[in-house]
Image 1 (cartoon, rainbow, N blue to C red):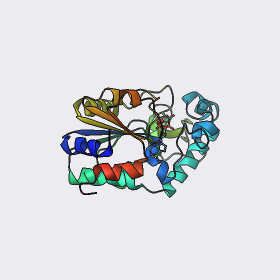
Image 2 (image 1 turned 135 degrees about the vertical axis):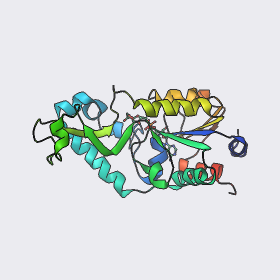
Image 3 (image 1 turned 90 degrees about the horizontal axis):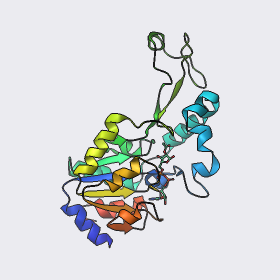
Length: 241
Ligand code: OAD
């Protein structure tokens, strides 16, 4: 299927869902997870950094790793792909919903309204254990990580770790967007992490994969466009490219 055909599907679709993964931000300079050389999970073990057990065992190590990624994300900018999505949403209010596995906030910074961040946000933190009145009464004591001065409860990154539930309301809204769409664009994800990958397969309408490499979702797609987010999305979503 050619780019021109998919452009026609975009033009005809009244409800579009766009599911993005780490490849969406690759051209902004944010590393993906599973690239064999540069991917984060090629250089770090997820079980040491992205689980609640890892955080409880070594909170400083995990906190500092997320702080390093947070600083890196603050230095980069949305790319032409993020910008094309946001511009389309501004020209066509209510027609495209962004569902993202990314925690970097780049869709939001590009100006996309109503982004559904399935895996939380690396820009925020939250209490590890349910906050008690003492946790709320005063600002946490600075540290790696910050903690409640009274009970010692720790702040942790507001991301979803392996083994954790996705935020219920965000997942429900994402499922609703998938079930209601007549076109699902799946951008820059390997499609191996669930339930996010299941949303692509649950699309009510056509599903199109945009990825320079093969992904686990190619078999379910009506079209696969081999290219990058920052090159393909402007061509697909601009009204007059
Ligand atoms: P992965 O690293 O698994 O996959 C990134 C995908 O992006 C690959 O399929 C690449 O081929 C593709 N890609 C690379 N550069 C691209 C570009 N410029 N344009 C488009 N695509 C490109 O990342 P995710 O699928 O997002 O979860 O990973 C899913 C989840 O696994 C993440 O949200 C994270 C991780 O563990 C948590 O941390 C909970």
